[in-house]
Length: 322
Image (cartoon, rainbow, N blue to C red; front, side):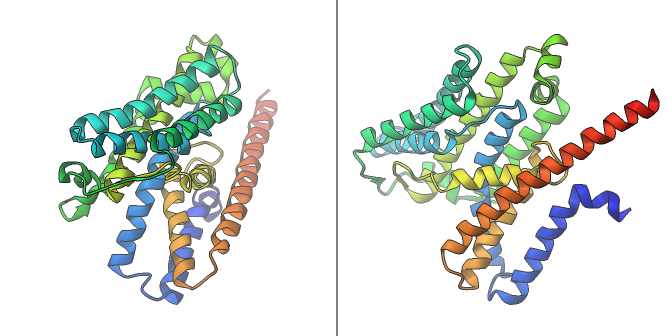
């Protein structure tokens, strides 16, 4: 029984051991205040990682999510700073994210530019526009409570950020697991040509995955700006590698070898737990970067091993059945 559970939940068990280690050796780690901080930090990472996972589900990479989020944040901040209604600023931020996602989808499916190249180009454009809009200076001020409350408020004693994360994760999971569109996205990512021959509009699925990734970047932007009462070019840059790591690490659990929402959530929490615990232990700042690199390489290696084993098992079963 244990051997059957380890491939799916081994990384989860490792995360629990990590929690126990920091609880035992890092002062104040297990306090309710610190755990709340970890969950709030996880919410930012999880939202952008879910977007990356949705794009990767259709076998496309979106390397522009962080720069698009930064551009959406400064767009939102510029409007708030200029006295626009919070609703207008929020819609503008979401629109920037969604627009960038649609642009990526168009470049990949219509212009036939590989997503690696297309999204790198979009990232460069977004980064340049962010600095053009701000001239390198952050927007900072005492912004309306109607806006900052999106991130700083709470419901039933739980931070709004955690509610946003839970709601977005649930909707993304619902999409992939319980809708025809989600099943078509998964099929497109796993076997593009076979899905196309089966009548699935694979181009549309890829555009949807990239559009949703852009939308998640817009949501992250709005929440970050509301939480910090500021917006600066490059403000979401630190989430880029962590988002990739969360998705790749998530592919080693729950549904090994496949981007999945529950695994991405758990991985995001593990990464933020690791960073928080290392800080409380007094580890040097570069220890987090080293750990992140090890996690990225290790998770890809583990996911690839799981996929090779699964492919071998299917082939063996087919031959035995024949």
